[in-house]
Length: 494
Image 1 (cartoon, helix red, strand yellow):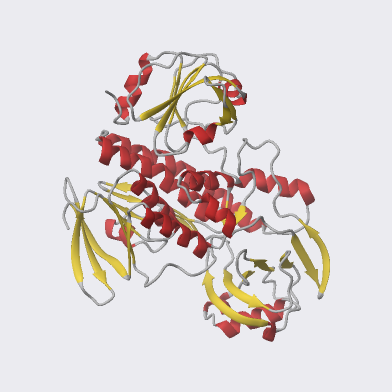
Image 2 (cartoon, rainbow, N blue to C red):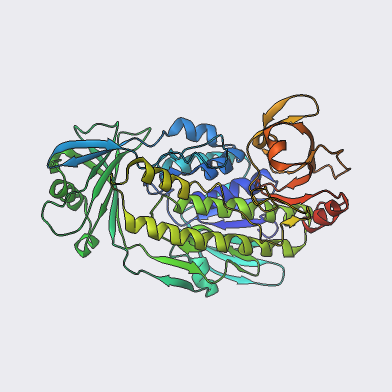
């Protein structure tokens, strides 16, 4: 199969599938292998944060995800079998950067994966379940990946690049000998499961804060999953939870809530986990990359895991595309680790803090807004990256700068139409905005818009702004001479 695949993606979770979609839409020949016989069937990563929704919109799947999901319901506290008030876990941050997706969206992980899989296949990518990576070797020009199918058959696939999106127990990472640095610390274990429960309303996210038997184990939550008749169970656990069975899940619910065991009519999926905080020493080894949980492990506090992982994919996809399709310098790929590892480290700290804090009604709307402010991911920037070139002088402290996410505000183009900026950015291309400037000549692969007004123009100020395919400003300048130098770095110079 030498030459038939440009990038082999190992792992068909949200990270691997999002990356494969991004590559496939760029004309990069992409193949995904998944060790499981089918895609993961649980709801685990159910929260899509605003910035992730923007990325998934650009990949062409957000309409389906909106139809499949719903907003987070209000929390319903229960005490001694009685309802004890409703409250919001998250409230929109009024100071958050503008986005067409201002609030998190609730979609079971298995459904997100199905939608991404269908998009990948429509784009011409390929997916192979029941096939695991056994080992890999690198040369100066290729990666040789040995694959083993469910029947024990083996074959070797030779590819220019390989990306490990194969989770916390990553075979790719272990084969490369890349260490994960971190520790479990004082993070408590938990049980997560998908269950069907009789006679429990689906208009609320139910939480039991009391611990009836006084073991100090903690709260239990049941969240209705949109588009299904199931709830996601999340509960603090003790070591006894390691030997988890469906009956044990029923007993857990009956012991810690007023819901009797026989009201749990079905346990669809269940898992016991011990959260930890860990970060891979590096995200790249030659022609092999790590993304998602294979590169960073963190607790589910704040619903950040799936989101930060999809952002890894969104960052790496366009860079691999530029190298494979446009012969950009290999050095472009170094920016992936340089940008994403610090972002992941920040989220690890945030997730651990929110996981320890837990969920409770104390603090009211102020606490809910604070939580929303921390988790939307709209403020993540790459100002320190070698790919961020800011040449303008005397900028204010609040100015949008190179490395920042482009603001999704209305902009008026020279034909007089007004559209949200992200609508102009949608697609796998670079975008040049000439705000109150005459656009210079650029290669045909760069989409150019002359911007004459609107909130986006006011926010950016006058100048030339080259926006990367992932929506971050790569170059902000007043001098057209800087443009060609930047385009050379990303493989787009004439």
